[in-house]
Length: 71
Image (cartoon, rainbow, N blue to C red):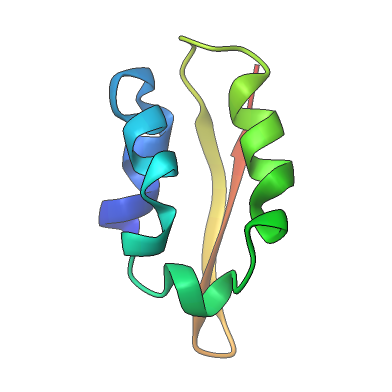
């Protein structure tokens, strides 16, 4: 999953990837409806054009979790 999560930090590719979230590995299974991603979309749009920092990433129960700092 780092291959998908890491580009979210890059403003040049973030919007393209967020628009295609269903194509991410496990994207549709992890987020069965669009409203599950609203907090991410709001945070990602809070400071357009600025980089994000991946503050943590780990596997819990066989699923990858990541945390990002925005702003």
